Length: 176
Picture 1 (tube, one colour):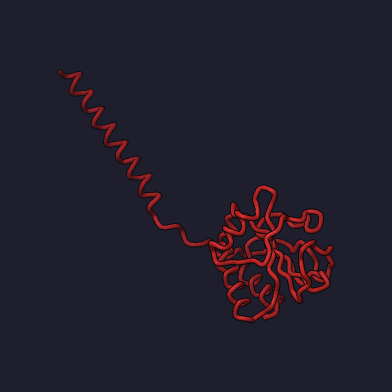
Picture 2: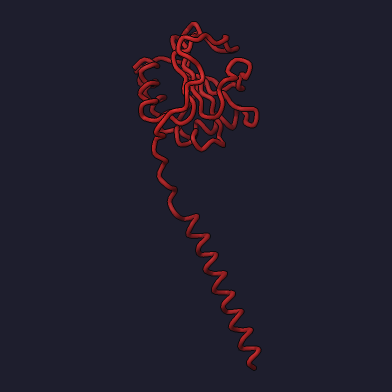
């Protein structure tokens, strides 16, 4: 009888432990997502110098300004940057500036997934194209941004999640 009682106690303890593990896992998935990370203190160096000419990119029309964005749905910093990109698109819609916005996807992604990802945040680029490594090969990592003028001269370039100063620099460069 003592052995049966010991086994029953162990079985009861195992059930309690399993319930606690299940509750902990469920509780973790039910917690609200953490707040977005704060802005980075420092920005990585710009991949392209201001005034540097890049080769024309096939399928792009000449605009006063064209914002080239390298984005990936698998990039946490792209996701954290989406509120700023939403603001950019809203400001463009309200005619605060006129620039073509082109998103480039990496070989591991495709046009449909990148377009759907961006549009799920309300960011609708004019074009979504494969990343032209032969032209923009110095861009490493996502997100990366290059703003060019109508002659394909670099107005500004940024790598990674922008801090407040980087956002203001881009807004000023794009024509605010």
